[in-house]
Length: 57
Length: 228
Image (cartoon, rainbow over all chains, first blue to last red; front, top):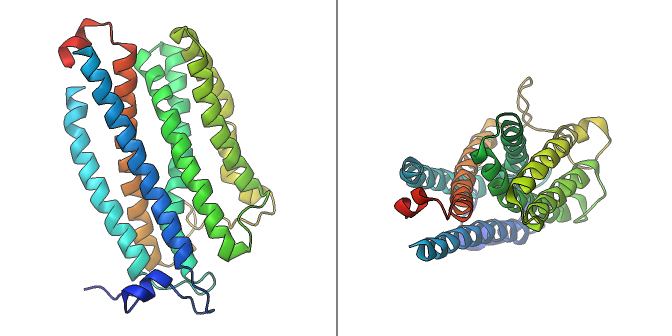
């Protein structure tokens, strides 16, 4: 179904380009920053709403 | 509020699945870029954040105009609710762009028109939040905030056109309404998916932020007591 670009997990982690440079560190860092930022924001709002709802009850 | 609560879960799960599938597709299935190598895959995280950070400001400007013209209270709440989400998406756009710059440009920061105007957008979001929170009178704060948002909206066309008006290190737009996309369709489909998915996730954050704002500002009203 998919034609994967990488043959193994190690290759996907390193993401070596044709010029020989490993770009995985950059791509994975950005992915982690994006996911952590979104998750932290969701947790912050969910907790704040829960707190204020409790107070209002 | 009840209808929004019901719509929230649908928007959240559909957007999350679309976003994750598009990211997976972009990171593992699309081919390597001939010029930038595998670092170009950051596009699937950077472009949605950058696009949404500017779209959120436009939404704030529209809500501000509605508040100033028709005095719709909900619009003022929406302006204050969008600001922190806008700051977070702009932060993601700046950080992801900086990390992308290391393998592509050889530096994480340049005083380039596009990057500086995006940094100004980030500072504006933070400034608007601080300004609103510095007032004890909410009505006055809403009015000042709305006026400042409208004044600051001049930065949005500057961000958009910066790559055309000035010679910048940042590449020009790959997707425009009038021209054929500059990137291959194989790379374009997951990009569209990630933009739509991210927009849905951000919409959910705006819903949560608005809910918190309404609960805080209307806490003394009877309908809120019935709602909770």
